[in-house]
Length: 288
Length: 265
Image 1: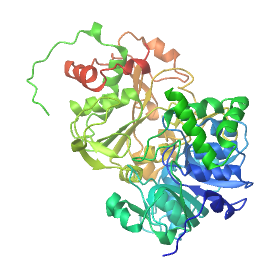
Image 2: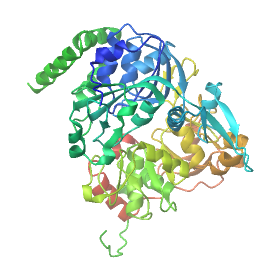
Image 3: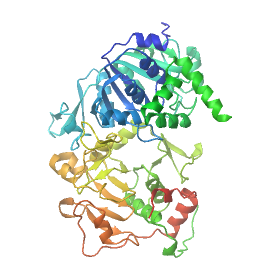
Image 4: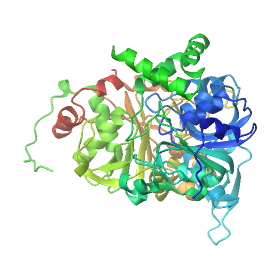
């Protein structure tokens, strides 16, 4: 099996400005944050981001990387509203396709299944169809002639997901409460990049969890990044929960440009190692 | 579940708080629903759903808001033991359930209008909102697939508006215009607020005042509503929780009194 291990920066080197990139996880849960931080450090721009959004979307917006956003929500879960997302929408610095959560799933599934659209009831009657005039309806060709939303496929140039474990070939395993839609993001993508807490020998995967926890097949994966604490500050159960104190600090800092600049200097001005060191130093400080 | 002897203790109305009246009113939203998934979002509806199941609606399915269905009754903020897990409902399966229709959600929109259209997305012009909220989330799908109720902790003309800025949750006028499955399945069961209970049995399914909470006048509700509310000649008072419901609320589900943080009245 091909060894697909690479670094965050090597993943980013394979991406291009203007690409459509899907990000796995959900809200502030199991987000591939080390890959997101690497994009923030890069010279990539004008990205279209598809996400059940959390601080991944917030950080990319704050770094000015996003041209267009396809989403059903952007939330930090324990803090309902994402401050950078709010600012970007209220300042009109990003264009959006705001869809129902289920429509997003259908769009990814359609792309993964090489279909141009899938029919869905969700969206009918709502302003999702008004604010997205590109969305079309489809009528059942059968006797019922029911009308549906024709949810267009959401093909991705690249997908980024973070799992608990993977082997070097890209067999990925989740050990937490929910797979979210990570497998669909990978399936919908031309190239999928999987970061994980630990790269383990293949034989160790089934020792860590039931065979059903093997969510991602290596045939879907272009690159594997070992990223311990890589989902920080989002959840990565059971390896760690959300760093709520850090998330609060992030939210506070995002409220004005000066405090955000200080936050950026402290945590985001260096590489991933520097970020993790600053987070550890901060946690030690809090204990004292 | 323990077998209770049927000793009806009298409830002293003076001891019942507004939050507890709201919980009973929210619990009643799921009355008669049977074996479906009850999905409350905020504190008062969460207490209400658990209270409903512990008393008059024992077949409801309840999740931890994460990915597990649990049996029994547990406190806000607590995780029940593993041997009480009865099912696995990751988000993808929640979509399956909601598309099947076997769910009744209680959401808390920032705006709701006369026909039950609801906004959780953004305030102001959509292209550049004056205040960005969550996004539509699952509201478009929820409302056209299964019963939906709303919990409004602070009844005001800012929430109850003539027209919502963005229709995330579909109301009756939109459903009628859509026709078909949508018209058939949209059901906005009730709206519970800190002042009153409202339903949609007014003319053309417009919002009607169903009851006012003890200590609230009809005029107060009308004044706090930004559109012409359908008000029947006789408006009953919202019911008090039963003694058993109060015991569940106070001793089992919310011993820390979080309900009073969500309802101030």
